[in-house]
Amino acid sequence: MTAGIVIRDAHFPGRAPIEAYGNGGFRFADMSHRGSLLCLPSGVYGWEPADPAALTPADFVRLIAEAEGVEILLVGTGRNLRPLPAALRAALKEVRISADPMSTGAAVRTYNVLLAEDRAVAAALIAVD
Image (cartoon, rainbow, N blue to C red):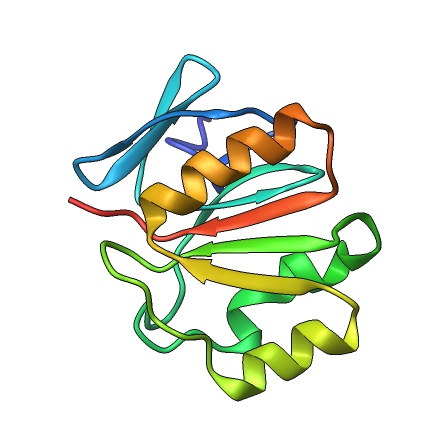
């Protein structure tokens, strides 16, 4: 008996530069992903924060679990820069992660540069149309 279609969480097991963004998604590692991304040392994950306009520590549980391998978090907040809520900043500071919010485009470009320099960087990228 067959189990039918199995849907798995989107995950690419490795670090990869972002090749393109827009149209509601991203291209990386010769693949495309529709929706937002969380780029960590353990890989690139599909990421859907509960409310992209009001990020919370709960949206970053996977990042916080890998905090030891991350010094800088780039947060692509969409088309426009939005400050990070105080509770999120405090949670990241507690695990010694410096967070820099910026537009998604700026975050993608900065992530690629820091990744090429082999820095301890992670990125949370909200998809833009």
